[in-house]
Length: 313
View (cartoon, one colour):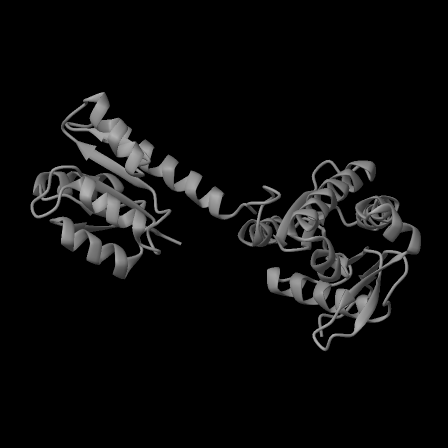
């Protein structure tokens, strides 16, 4: 998808230069003053803003302050354009939320490099789960589709912690986050133990993970993951709860219900058995297997299964 750059600058010469520099890589829209820039940012939600410090109506600092207070542009990268190289002024801008500075007159090559670098870094940040720092859904999709384009056989696995909500309700979010982090580590260890050196581990969100790996190694990856999770699960609990093998949670009606210890469900689909034409196929079929496998168990050890159907129908 083409990135959109908002240039806020009243200098027509600068607008022309930036358009030529970035027009082949991005869509460039121009605002001539501060209020116009704020309106364009609200309406167009650009991927990056080039903001001149000295503009009529509002200064770049004033615009930047409002951009950082607005929900849609709170995290949008902003590169300030300024004719002043004063370090104190730049420090003030960084304090207001500027991401970078380019001093006029600028080198076209330098400006383009800074813009493209900042866009790439922002895209990577958006694609990473903030808790585990693992790639998120966009990167997972790209990994699957890149293997499809390359004609590489692969397996797509979904891993889901069973009864995680009950654990989170009982012990609180901080303990729940520690379980998610530990699960991420266990999944990475499972791929290493299976000899999968080119595997991919992503975090869809919450207690849901995705793995992409060699089709032949996938059963071993799943087996190691479930085995290691069951070894680790009792240590996630207080000793008394682990000894009982259950925790008690009060439901919405006021009744107390017992919940077994955490386990892990791993379900996958293998492209050598079913032709996977896109990420949607992989996610749907692995999701069907995960739902079926979870429906067969309300307690007990972790489990894994693969879709053995050979037809995409």
